[in-house]
Image (cartoon, rainbow, N blue to C red; front, top):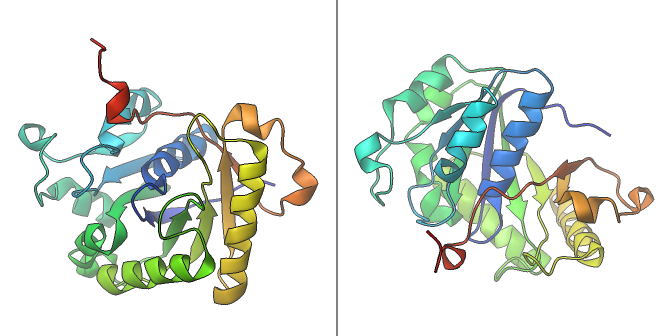
Length: 230
């Protein structure tokens, strides 16, 4: 099974869901199919995991990366680059918006309402079954409602990004997939894809998974792993 994304794709999720990692790797996967791709970093809340960390490898692939102005690159201020509106008015084959976590982070989407109006949009909710608040269906639905209310955009699809960092196993991938299928049954929303690293993906029984798998290469470095490095 393959993924076929076009137009504007918004990737959102609660803190720790891995939505930025998902957005970055989705951009790379789309670019590898020959499509023109742009990705905008709208995460103005979370100071650790941001698309801007993957700027250099993404641009090397020919992906347009839209970030806040250079002097604000590492700031935690509500700054939205004018270029974001520009790429929405003149989108690439695939234009990905890496929205902030939870309801607070996606409020920036509401400010883009005029630009997004009447555009074809896919809004993906990334779910990590092993993070607080999204370990069960009720928690996932609560986060979904918060995102939709604050962002003024309806979620159109679900993504399972089940992981426990370096301790992730194939069993964890299955467990996350099963949870997202339950959310799908409650909402009627499709499971667009799940994620897995190349090592874990090679261990999966694809007969158990009825959706595409996005291969995840880790671009985001947790802040605690920077300690002691130069």
